[in-house]
Image (cartoon, rainbow, N blue to C red):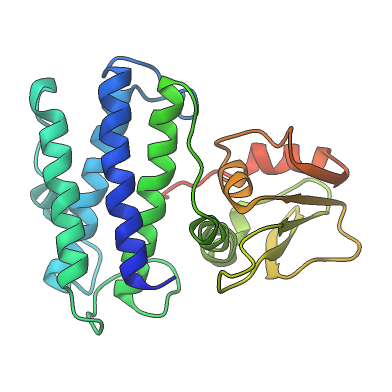
Length: 256
């Protein structure tokens, strides 16, 4: 996906996030993030938006210190002003990404074609996944367009776990292949294979003929399932479903 389309996805997801937060109420629990209330999740995403914008806006080449990060984000407001605060940070991030030159140089933490491409992609998926969390606090979670789903699966598997595979471990070697059955017109990969071992994981694009488990389905459903935002009950699972349980238990994204 192009940078502009990632920014468009970020913009839409932020608007939908606000809508879901208003419907749920700040004290509502978030089923897919059980440690957080709606209030805390809105605070988290608003924090991340301001943090991300600080790097792109300033061309910062090194990670912010704790004090610099606190200055960039500022304090959380009280409840009556929380959504306005969120929207201001969201709008500022969208504007910064749209205005930034393509050759913007700044710190980023996953491989990407450029720092600007990284931040647009990462914030599009950060906001889309947490939009899904907040919609889950209200009722049903909306899907995503095929190309965004495919892109998000690739970022999760090749980005997060491709760069940080040591964190994804299984006591017994096992292999999970994933195949998106739609999005034929979308650029980029449609299949991936994850091999989990006691010392970490390796991920490649493409299917394995001898995978222990193969998960097939529409890209939107696979995207949400691999991010552990929905079940795989209605997807095509061939082979050992226990491999999916390993994924669900071990595939968690943490900053540290």
